[in-house]
Length: 436
Image (cartoon, rainbow, N blue to C red; front, side):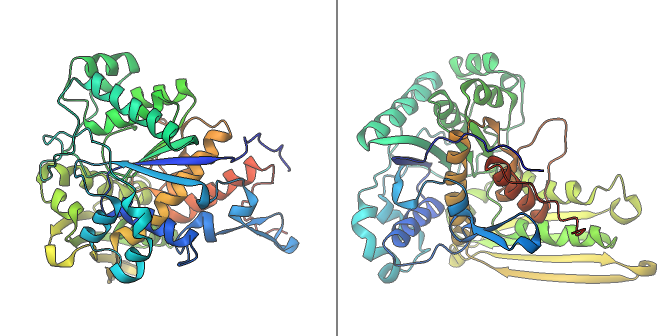
């Protein structure tokens, strides 16, 4: 059945993109966008730039590029800024991170990268113990820091003549934080902020500032940030989209493909051992046990939600799931994710799957960040507010309605994303019944 087309404001003018953090991921996104718009590279990995969407019946042969189907902002409209406790420009950050080839991908766009100087960050070393830097806001109260961030957003928008803004967190992993009384509603959160309560980490101040300014907020880090009732309440009240958390880029991406295969074929799982080796700033931060515990939570929850052990206790009721992350400086941004998977099949006979994913962390994350910026801007212009569950495709630990379990299956997530785009444009949703 056809649906009515959703009203979507046009994607006119400039779209300001502020990144929380200007490290490997953020500098790789910014450099990549600049190279692509100058015609020096292709947007490989980006659904918004290279993906297609089928419309109608299979026999209709109606397939369109996503960027021509929905009114997305073009990459020529993007204007980047950032906060970071380290004062390096995007050019200096890109060189130090070592993700991109200096001669091929950094020097040709050095002029643009040098113009992006990070604003002083809200930073607390109690939250990220392995990092420090001089480019931080003075140690005022948390309410004052939030107001300073709000002013940064307004000043950036005015200085760069931006019509709209998006804030995306590419920040380091904070120490583990359980949701508490301060996070249950907006009134309690603001009281905790006024009291300089430790339950309000820097990541939440960035989110609060963005939402109070009516700006969409994307949480690409594993931190407890917008996935608490107080922030959902603020997003709904302000009429702003939020999405998170933790970019699904490497090892967990493979889990959300392989685990659904096991369940679809009713194959059993005894254990899944995952280890990671990486040497970038993210690896250094995760070498701290408190930060690792935060990351561990987003990586461990995937299998239980995917395999539903309560429904299939004989197949998945006693799975041993282990995750480790090892900081190894020589590897840099070239992460290695190794999985040893013990499965069993017909009559209980054991088998194994071995996966060795030699990937590049920021190269995988950069197109996700670009897509999320463009899709959340679309959501804002379409009047969508609160949790954008249709963007689960991009996250390790996707935000979801409190009364349902999260959807982790990558291909179900992809179907939900594309059906949302069809619904926005008044096209029939596709459920692949195969009954044509």
